[in-house]
Length: 228
Image (tube, rainbow, N blue to C red):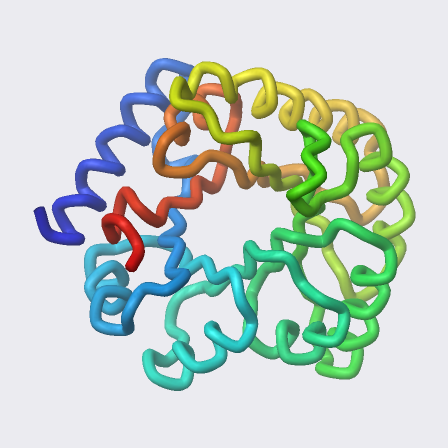
């Protein structure tokens, strides 16, 4: 199958999951995760109509944008060190991995210097895994309240990455927990905080994530095949 075939197959899965949960397929955006994917295959995915390019590493994104241009939105989904904030602000339309005050404050400072407002998601480590980034679930509301007043950041929602399971149904409680956190934050009606985005779900579990409210699904292997 070609990359375009893979994307068509994923879109069919997105539409089916949306229908099962009473949602419109147009409410879910497809991100192509391009970590360690060569430029030609990324171009093919863009031609086939993915909405977002998702990158894990700042330097890799910089090189790829210089080669490919930047007509589509690029989002950072990987862990971000504060010393890469200046470059990240220049490269990305949205950063999914804000998980601590120090990073948020530095991104705000760099965005102000660049004369822009940067859209961000708060990354939540719902499962409390020590090997993964993200603010612990119980601490997420306090972080959101602290970040909200920063004038050059715009919180748009939440992101999570659940543990890996062979059965995607086992990931459902983690997706549900993120949606329930979104609903609680939304009910607070915090100034300058939008909770419209839930970035969750990858190749193996995106259908379950959509049933639980995902608005952005992050697909790598399902589009590009196994990474080298």
